[in-house]
View 1 (cartoon, rainbow, N blue to C red):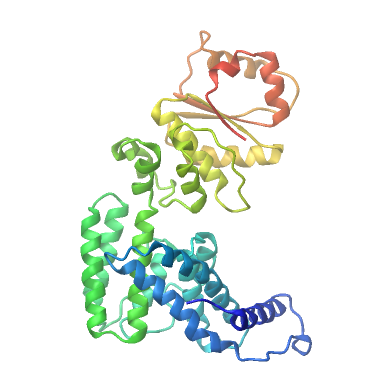
View 2: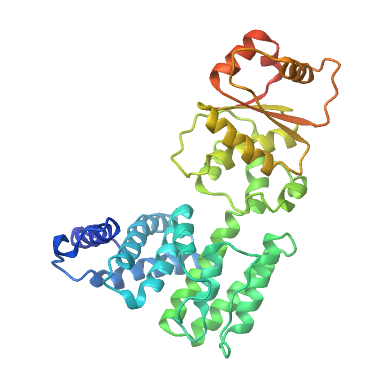
Length: 382
């Protein structure tokens, strides 16, 4: 399935229409719609349904076809989102937002997916008599500690409840992966046997989402990318503030071997997860014993302060000292004592590891003042 030129033209016009409303342009100046954008609905829903079904099947390994569908799914997600903002389908706007959020997630755009999911009510307007959409929205919002409503007489209430509990238990390290897989297979088979067309679409999407979320979960990715056993990460995983899922940026860091000590140069766009990626690099370096000191170099003092505050929260329950160096070209008494600690000179600190956050200018001055510090540092993030 592929969106051809005519389809892309409809998509572009729909996006333009949505932007005109977003910018508050009066309707008399809006672009004309030569074709009804709703004509694309069947095709775009088909793209989502095909990829979801492909990922839901236990033994379907057509990776080339999956990658092609993922590319098309980005366009489908954009179409659903734009159509919901274009005021052409007010009666199904919530449904379109749910489809758009699911499409973005399965297209490896979790940030865009989460933004849309947060705009959807926890209990959206009824789309199916079984209320499968409530489970789907719960997954998209990633609010596992929250509950969601079931239909009063829903056909699949027991299966929905068991699946949600098994998935939550797995993420909280209280259940095995096989428990979730068994519930997924039974749930899908039951809905396929008696569900409506929309319920089949939703159950495949739910199935694909859970499988993808498990593959991207910290439980799976931390041992995979760091080479450290899962039990070494137990304290970190128990931290409520630690990420439950690796986004594409963090998975790229893992694939490049950075979490195992390799060096790499990476460029990430805004909101791609740079700070979380740095936290992962630092935690893996400390936990593996490769480093006791990490230096983060940021271009502006305001950014240094933001990173420092964020890391103080992230490492609140760890024996890690977060130190932001003052952006002045001198070393005061406190920093002199801190240097003694870093260099092991008759100074006993209360923390096992240290993170320094500094501007480039201050770091250069510090290294000139105490060149031996460079030999102590084993981990630098810029």
